[in-house]
Image 1 (cartoon, rainbow, N blue to C red):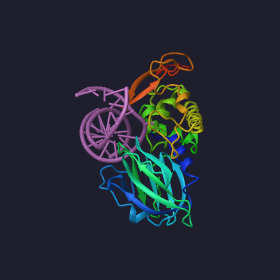
Image 2 (image 1 turned 30 degrees about the horizontal axis):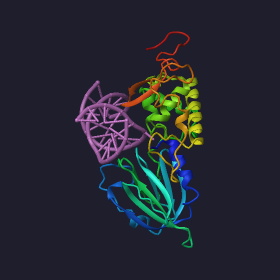
Image 3 (image 1 turned 30 degrees about the vertical axis):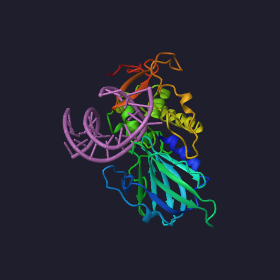
Image 4 (image 1 turned 120 degrees about the vertical axis):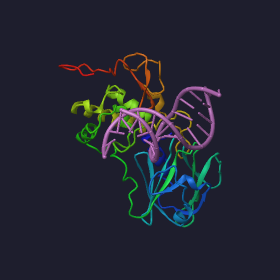
Amino acid sequence: MPELPEVQAVVNSLLPHLPGRRILTVIQHRADIACLHKFSRRSKGIDLAELLTGRTVRSLFRRGKRIVFELDDKAHFYVHLGMTGHLAWAATVAKAKRPHTHLVLNLSGVDGHDPGDLSFSDPRRFGRVVYLPPGLPPDADLGPEPFDLAPEDLHARLRRTRRPIKAALLDQTLLAGLGNIYADESLHAARIHPRRRTHTLRRADVENLLAAIRRTLSAAIAAGGSTLRDYRDAAGNPGRYVEQHAVYGRRGRPCPTCSSPIRTIAVAQRSTHFCPVCQPAQPRRRGRQNG
DNA sequence: GTCCATGTTCTTTA
DNA sequence: CTAAAGAACATGGA
């Protein structure tokens, strides 16, 4: 479900409800969906109830693909949705329980008014809730936000490696927020072949790429993200950005720019969609070409 | 039964 | 040593 635009949509749909509310009860159905300090799959898990009960949610924001909650004791916790995670906000009256619900926080307003449930469900269980004690930042291991960094910074980061650009864009320590959909869409918008080696990108290429990433993400955020199958925001609304996909999920269909059939290849063990005409493997350059 | 999936960490290889 | 490639995780749908 979740890349930067979808996570932003979830945050946006929660913002009217959560800040200022107090966590009254915590129901955690399995320990191993939560962990301490860092995202881990082999951790035995932790009990969130003792850490969260009685706390007030100060603020809520997105960082990379993380949904970060700031608490009144200066601790944080974040939800990472993994592949199939889902956060739902519901007034306590109607509880339509999804299967695979692992955590339910009951929250109410300052005077006990306006109660509601925030529930986390995740069939595949790749998602996690990560708790950070006061003083520890929730994003120490993340690269910069695409909208925050300067092109020169991205260029410097890309020059440190020789990976295919697609692999680099998926690396959350290099740049936070892109996943398989928006990496492919951004590379198409920038007319860069996904197997292009990062260290061969020149300054103008990187400026072009960063601009393409920002355009792509902005448009996706405006559309509420991409719903391929299951994704919904916390109010249950799907995203509408798939209609605007140029390459992702469009193998064999015409490129919106040049009408050539979209192809898929494997890069960094992920299915990778691109237009062989708009994104040539050897871009024609002045002077000699490299291979 | 097979293959594939919006993600990340851990392990192995080069 | 470091960087890159591969395996593993868990569930469901085509």
